[in-house]
Amino acid sequence: MHNAKGLLGRIVRDKLWRFGYRRSLCSLKLTSEDLDYQVLVEGSGCSRTAILNRPPALNALTTHMGYRLQKLYKNWEEDPNIGFVMMKGSGRAFCAGGDIVSLYHLRTRGSPDAIREFFSSLYSFIYLLGTYLKPHVAILNGVTMGGGTGVSIPGTFRVATDRTIFATPETIIGFHPDAGASFNLSHLPGRLGEYLGLTGLKLSGAEMLACGLATHYIRSEEVPVMEEQLKKLLTDDPSVVESCLEKCAEVAHPEKTGVIRRIDLLEKCFSHDTVEEIIDSLEIEASRRKDTWCITTLRRLKESSPLSLKVALRSLL
Image (cartoon, rainbow, N blue to C red; front, side):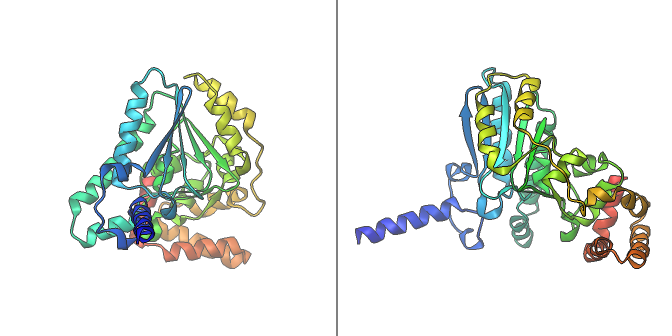
C-alpha cells in the first residue's frame, strides 16, 4: 500500500508538471509555484538564462509564461550584477508559439477577457525584449514558430542550428503573423517576408542565417560548448558577447533547392499588391515550369484562410 501511494504521488506530480499539455488536466488546481516551472532559470557568473519548459507542448507560451518572463527580465535589467541574458527551450523545440489549444478552450468557454490577457502578457514581453538594455542571446535549437519568433528575434543575437525550423504559420489557422512578425518579415530581402508570412512554410537554420533572421549558426551538438563559453563571460558589452558567439559559430550554406535560392522567382510572384494577383502569378509559373516548389506554394496558399491572407499581406506592404 505504501508503494502504491508513492507511485500515485509521483503520477500526480508528473501531471502537475505537465499542466496545460493535455486537456484532461484542466481540472487540476495548481499553485503559482507549479506554473513557474513553465519558465526555469539558470544563473552563472553575470548571465541569466530563461528556459521555456513545456516540452510536450513544444514550449508553447501561456499567459503565466508571459508574465513570468516580464518579471524576470525586468529584474535582470535592473540588477547591476547581471551583464547579459539568454533564452532557450527544453526538449526538441525553442518555442512553437502561443498555446493555441488553450485559446480555443477559452473561446469555447466564453472567456474573452482571459484571451485579451493572454495576448497582452506576451505582447508586453515582446516589447520589453525589443527595447531591452542588456545583450540578449536566443538559442533557437529546434522548432521556432509564431510567437516563438516574437520572443527571440527582437533580441540582440539569435543562434540557429541544424535542428532549427522557423515558420510563421498563422494564416493556416485563420490568424495573421503577429508578435512583431509583420515588422520582422517586412525587413527581409526581396519578397521573402511576403512568402513566409502568407504561406507559413518553413526555413532551416542555414536559411535563417542567410536572410538575417539569425545572427549566428552552430551545429546542435556544439550548443552545450557554446553555452559554457557564454556562461564564463563577465561582461555587459554586446561586442564581447558577439566575439564569443563568432568563435563558436560555423559557416552554413542553404540547400540548393531551398527558397533562399529563389529570390528572383519570389520577386516575380510575390511583389503584387493583392493575394489574387500573387496566386495568379504562381499559377502561371506552376503551369509553365512544372516546378514542385511552385505547386507546393500555390497549394499552401489555397489551403489558408482567405481573410488571413489579405490581412497578412496588408500588414507586410
